Length: 231
Image (tube, rainbow, N blue to C red; front, side, top):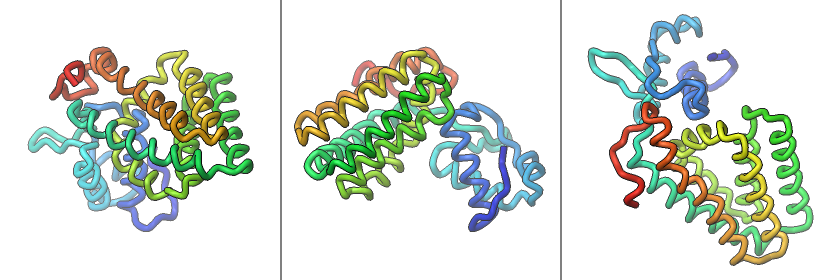
């Protein structure tokens, strides 16, 4: 699970691998994490493992329970509305700017990403879908010349990304999202800032509307510290 490769430090390697696996839901919420087992798998001491786990704990991806152990944290429901609001505001801004600035070359690049998404839909492979999904959003921010806003989006949407992985169990979800992406790109190509913004709003709101039913379907993955139906 934790492939060794040249990086800044062992702790950084472990942090990146664990972070990726937790956000991708390859390691499910509630799963115990053993420092000894991870250290043995990597052939390292427990020190870099502990450093990585402390970083993940600060990000609320890992929960360290005294005298009980270390576990992959469940998703706090209360963290989701604010994350969605921040993501929506930032992405609508970049989409609006992209509609003003996109060139023909930019549109070709966006449509290439859309084509790759449709190819993934056809194969039924879930592993790379959200990687390509994020590539599209990052490209929109690049076209807008607001790449730093995409960096902010990535920081605020960690818990949202865990929820997004759960939607892949719906067989029609990837196709629906890809069509939404295509509509966003159509509006950007038309240079219609208002329409592009509205379509990005619709796209991001889709997940928000799914969250209450998701919490109900996967209760063991969430901390029910807020009623999403009341927001």
